[in-house]
Image (cartoon, rainbow, N blue to C red; front, side, top):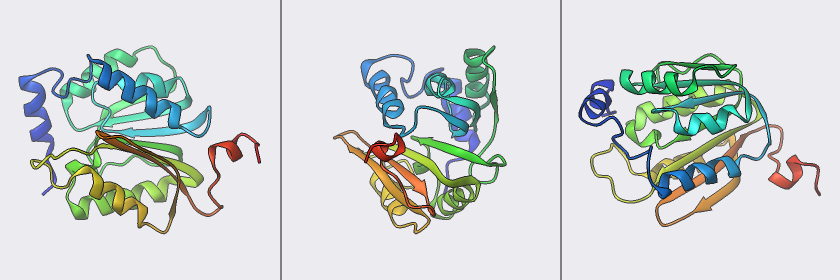
Length: 202
């Protein structure tokens, strides 16, 4: 079964930074890799589910005219709001996947370390909702931990295998490390374009 909001509220009750997002080179570097992998320099409207305390959201906000952030844990939402206070075009609120995906359209969705908390039915519903809200040619960036996590409904590699099998998405970026996999998918049609093609290079 999918992990509930109570699971995340309990994590935050015991530790304000349950995944060590706020400190350490691994997380800082991973955020930099995520931002570097975005095929476009700027996006009109983006959605970040599972934003946690907003550490990645800060970088995304600098690349987006509007950024919609959601998290299932009240304490995470409060921390993200405080971190992003004063930034124009940023909306932070509580929201659970898959039932509370905000209304589109979006030209970017960033699913960072979030999909493996959902069971198979909820993942399918989540990806369906994301595709429905992505504009044609819009990007879905997914990045997930690859090491064993038996407490989750599914592990990271399976999440990315499912995305690769979706006919409405075409992969344009793939980055593999021992610890995580990052992929960018474009909603098709139109035909997906590489990063070089996005910038006019042939």
